[in-house]
Length: 400
Length: 211
Ligand code: B12
Image 1: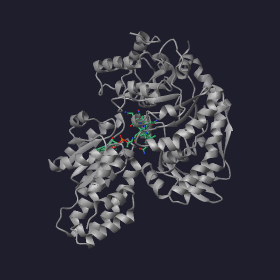
Image 2: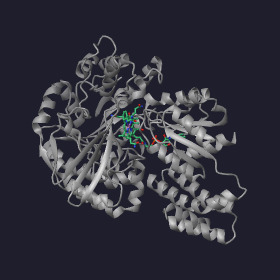
Image 3: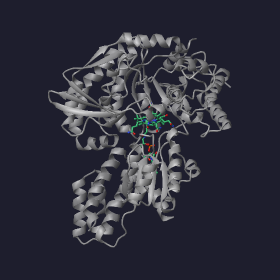
Image 4: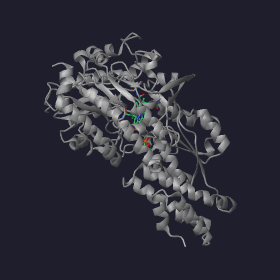
């Protein structure tokens, strides 16, 4: 069975021959190649896939490469959470909006002029962020500053046209080949409200605004529906098998009533479009899942990626499996701290992994991965050791 | 008369004007300012903190309550600063260098303010020297550091050392928090305390100040 087949089988709740092991190493790779600290035997210009081949797992092609764009101009709308990345299956076009762009050192300031008024935002990407391996830009000035901005941002989104860009995606899919599943990226947010929370306001301010300007917020959320609908439809018709929609759910940030009201309906809507076409819905669930465990299987999500257990969160894999009731595939399981020498000694790591394999047993609906990603200072040998463990213990169904 | 239930209801619904009015009314009725602070505002906020810890209310409720509490505090402040009562104790807090995660830290700030402390928020990506400068400027009793990345946790240790070298360590308590931080880590790096969540952070500050 190829890696791709294994992953898809696990994702569909069928038995693969062997437990799929798909470590995410992109941030580790970014950071160590930047610092010139890639371990032996790699040359300092070794590519991500070369290293993944050496580790011997599948390719983790789920979270998009946020730094990879076909031209720098494609970065321009990051401050409003709108992406044009290499490998995406759609391309957004802003209509009826004039952008004014100013560079100030590491910062990019974008002003959007619309017929009903202007809004602006600022984002940064610094050398230091690069060295730390971070791949996402940071919004330092959010687009919503006053109540009147809701309508203007609504105008921008109401007028975005989503074009299919399947050739772009197919290039990505071809490059991944049968070593992994190339997930088609929808958004970092699962729904308009989630988008407003993640991109348009300071995280803390968002909750106060929910209380202070609920009508404005609701209006904006409605204005953004067509944007999400178009993306959902274009992706449902795309050549992708797996669609990525929504990231960083967390029992605190997207607390249960918020998740129920503002996230689940959109996940269900997307899942209903995908499932008849045999496609699967994946979400990046890297936060504290404890309070959301019972809600996730109701959402239509097929794969919960980056599920991170104790000691980094409050949940164990056993608890997650029990709550998911065989309806959702867990992708993850190895918390990133397990790869750090300062957090776990070699013996502790061995013990931790043995226990994890026990919890994974019999291995249905499971894709082993690092949650959410291999940290820059990871002990590389531990990734190789996990490959060995998977070879020794990962034959499905796992028994003894 | 000071009706605690009324304070609690107004606070938990985030009604700033209502909290201000209740605070003023209590003062006008001759209640001592410390009593209005403790039994009106602080005890209500504590109740909300406990409910938050128990998962009965969520971030928005805590934030609006903390903000309403501020509104009440604004009424009391001019009187408190004149009265002989002890001045509010001061805390400076920030997310350490290289780290941009601030939701947890902001929550801790709000809860501490709700607990009656004066908080100076240094924001995110705060290097050791900025902590030191702020200690000199603001003369706090407690310094709080937040980190969410395993790569930036080490900055907490660096900051504690830098504060020591600057000769300021003895005059302050240093506490730490953030998802990857543990009690053991806090001890290892020589911090004075660790708390796993925002409500416990308030208890922690009270505890280290009592030591
Ligand atoms: C939301 C989030 C983000 C948001 C941050 C938005 C913001 N404004 O803060 C975004 C998307 C921007 C982001 C970016 C990144 N993130 Co992030 N993120 C998270 C996530 C999902 C939730 C964090 C959070 O806010 N939780 C909710 C709050 C309320 O909880 P809290 O922060 O723990 O705070 C509570 C307590 O810890 C405590 N507390 C906090 N501070 C303090 C301080 C004191 C003094 C005290 C006493 C207590 C205390 O009280 C708080 C309230 O109860 C976590 C997952 C997780 N398990 O934590 C990952 C996580 C922290 N992120 C991670 C990563 C890898 C990144 C990136 C590197 C990703 C990238 N591709 O670039 C960047 C780094 C950017 C940077 N340089 O900082 C990893 C870190 C791995 C590691 N151990 O190093 C995590 C753990 C995900 C994972 N499962 O692996 N992230």
